[in-house]
Image (cartoon, rainbow, N blue to C red; front, side, top):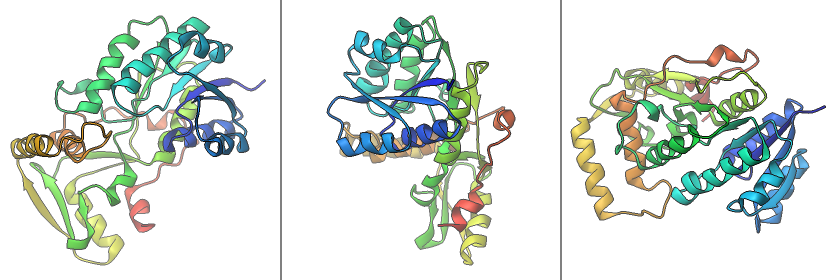
Length: 295
């Protein structure tokens, strides 16, 4: 009999890939989607073999009924406090009420557990939820993957137009990156693994700004150079100014939030170690070279 996995956030980018990875492993995937979700998004899940149940994610008894019989609840929810703290708390309470033994929260980030509070709004929300999760009578496993590798072509790190690699403070600081597909595959394997520890850390590649200069040059055939943005203190000042002038608090990833992630990565606070890449041997890890070569 297929293992029943409850998945919240399956209509999102990462969540959809987790759903497909679970189906590929023979799991019975039951996606919880918000009532009123666009029909085509739910239908796309059904087409790949996912059972879709529309629920009010804030209604604990209703969600608990949908979680009945599940062996693990996986959250791939994204959003602000109302989702990451309040929504996940309701999902957690429902999982406990339904007797589900395991819970994987929507972390999928840098190692914010090693970071001081106040340096990243989105990660602070995850830390706040963890305070509730760690008190709940359920086994939890966080999956930390660094930055999504796809952002190397989008975030202000490799400036292809100017043939520069922007860095802050230390050009030798290693940065962790993992593709969305690799993160999804690892999460699916962890959801089906009853012996997971509290935290699993993965990185498809670890590179410094100096490494990225060489890599960008190799994959484009052009000469790249380093561009120092300044110290971390200067970046902190820029974050405060940007947040004051362009608050965009309603957005999940406003400009200043992206700057906070850069600060976290170049500070080294959130470095992933040790890595658990070898836990599931069937995963082939995509490297930054492969990602940039296919750009």
